[in-house]
Image 1 (tube, helix red, strand yellow):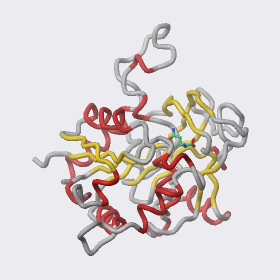
Image 2 (spheres, helix red, strand yellow; image 1 turned 90 degrees about the horizontal axis):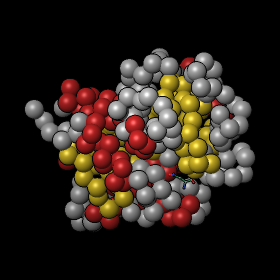
Image 3 (cartoon, rainbow, N blue to C red; image 1 turned 180 degrees about the vertical axis):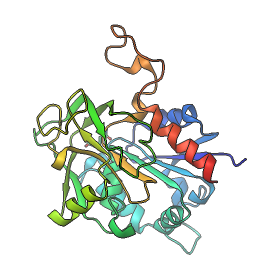
Image 4 (cartoon, protein in one colour; image 1 turned 180 degrees about the horizontal axis):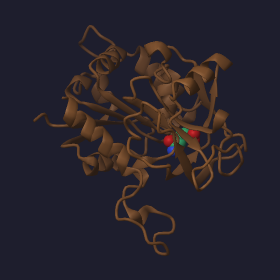
Length: 274
Ligand SMILES: NC(=O)CC[C@H](N)C(=O)O
């Protein structure tokens, strides 16, 4: 059987790479390699050797120009040393090969600003949305209830009943779209797979602090139409064990944290399809 291989990109200010790689291993990947972005740009590491690309959280380029904007330009336009291709050509091939990309927080901002989400009509290099300053005007560091759309094509949220409880920590998490048509397409295709909600996961919420940033339609995460590419502001890699839960000493909790399912689903998909 193929070895399921995950790649986590680090460098220029990411700070969740170790947790993301740990979550990949716990979720069932045989290998989780942390690579500096420079290793991709020099051609020492190539995406073709992996199945699951993790774009992780942090403060890429210090959030200058807006979170993840500089890295979005870097990934879209930088050449790979000694090769006739740009890094974006490798990413486009990665997607065409049926592989998986998960962007968390800064990684979600990166995917959106590269144009890779929501990628309506399969156009992966067309920016139609953004993530900008939280409506409250402050950085938010708190735990949120996230309602899952069971009709979404996202492979990561498969099997989740109701919703998940995960931490957020961001200053620029407000999801916005360029026009009403984009939002309508996102909703009718069920690409808005995660929404900030009340604690019973009954309804999406625009109320602060349930919705920590004022995202349009309470959107916390979206996927593309294939369900293989997903981005979300909350951090699934930060809740893979019960001791990461804020009330773990007071509540009876299962051993496994609620975020691990994202990585288990990704590993299962890779093992079934490669
Ligand atoms: N945790 C993160 O990845 C934060 C992303 C970004 N630096 C922000 O503050 O919005």
